[in-house]
Length: 154
Length: 410
Image: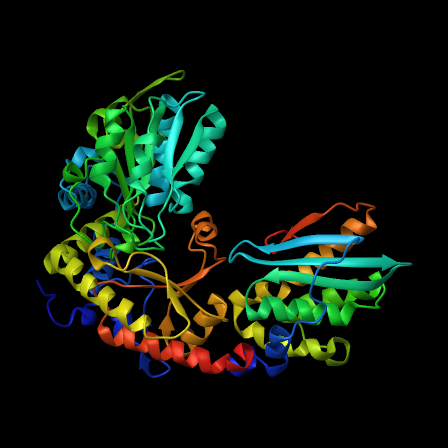
């Protein structure tokens, strides 16, 4: 049971986070928080011609929240905003129990074990909720630093 | 004074098995388990005399009323108070909100001060923030020292002629620290302030005598003391309760109602609008009988012994850092700690796989965690049914956590 939750790929991302750090200047800056546990993930992204050219994250929190953020940055870098939004929906769908679309999700399927631990689902979705919020703000023409919470309705 | 043998057997949930093993329940600071007698009391009420209180003219209604008011007398005796000073509420949070709303709004004006401490639970912080914002009052905070005790040297500086309310926890739900309420109350009274005590973590675990504490209000929750959820007590000094306006308006709290105005009953009924939580109040009374049958002195002595053992065993685990006082004489059984390199959620998750129930997070005390310089902690908390074997299981579990996350730590 534990091994399903903490898959090796996930532990590797936690120990060796990809794209960790700030990005200045950035087109998207979101400070994401999970109020129920205090975990934090901030997302920084540069968007050019509708494509996420550069993305980084920083944060404090558990293995699941930090590894999920690291994996997300790997997956969305180079994607168009439309592709990123579709992936966010697919990832959130997987975490909510939808059938897992393995080809589309790639490495992210390593996080599907989290579904068996309902209280940890918000850990996994924290970075994704933050990015989703950031993209919404960007597309609405707002460039200020925004806050996102796993408790917000989306 | 020793605990009688086989206390654990009184609790059906603890007799049950999970993955073929008895549960190691170390989260009683969040909620306690319930003894069979309490479960029986709930079922007996609903099965044999379920009726509304205070009005019915038939026999089961009379029986319900008698049992409900008898529960109030038991709770009053438990904290050495008068029954008319015991208001049934949903729990500590509602009790503290009642004081902030009904007493605070009548008493606190712009420029007044409310003194809190850095170790308060959100329930003894947020109601005062709301009151202070509404009234233009100022919140001040008694700091904690490095050892997790309150810095009483700062008390006289922080208490001024503007201080109207001092609200403080009797026992920290994170650090375990037992605060010297009498000392604080005496000095607060000297400047004319009233003293509100959060007893959520103390009343279940030690003998409490409101007269000896010297406070003006004390709130506590039934579910942390072997009773059901949704019932608790606000105790207040009668002269204060009498002067306070009501909290909620409605049935049961009135004497005479006209279209434009009403008159209210005397305390405690003035503060109990609507049909009360009859079943849970009666069952809480039975929980009090149960605890007194065991003996609050014996429970305190048992937990003191256990926390001493827990602190000593945890200090043997490399990478573990425990917060709060080391001396069991001035602390209760809530033991918060961190383990180097592993997030508290991950610690708790692996412990759960071993059947050990602990809590991880900020324990509704975010400012305290900020003060301690940590985002969150893991907390093991003890009660009468815990044993040294539970502590051993915790320590074995922590060793497993370290092995499991070994690759992360490397």
